[in-house]
Length: 132
Image 1 (cartoon, one colour):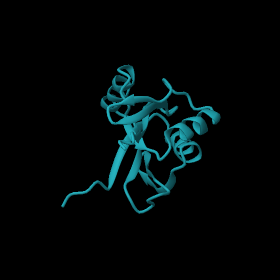
Image 2 (tube, rainbow, N blue to C red; image 1 turned 45 degrees about the horizontal axis):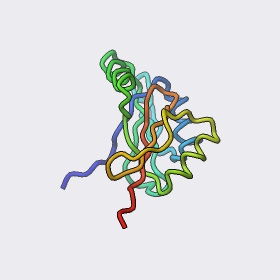
Image 3 (cartoon, rainbow, N blue to C red; image 1 turned 90 degrees about the vertical axis):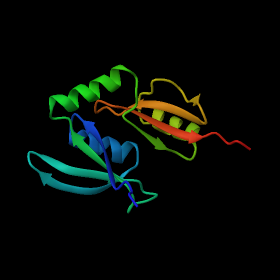
Image 4 (cartoon, rainbow, N blue to C red; image 1 turned 120 degrees about the horizontal axis):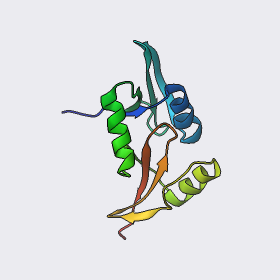
């Protein structure tokens, strides 16, 4: 069986990304070790600290920069995080100064909002729509 252990988002500045993803979004630091001229820097969900790690990967190559900029220009989130209460999380994050592209909207079977992570990415947060 294959499972996801680490996934990544490209970031313009690892220190700035670590601050945003921990202090603002609420992730926990997991791994922080030197990796060449950068760091192997991961965060995890406090709901699953031994689960999937999110690598805050430097966009130090032209390929990574082009990919990140192209996603952003197209309005496509680099990744999507689930939340239990989208309305409450949207208001909490707005209170912390997070910029959103729009308020929560229906997107298929989820409600979703897209935010700016201040590190070059658009990030989606979503909550399933209760079908009952």
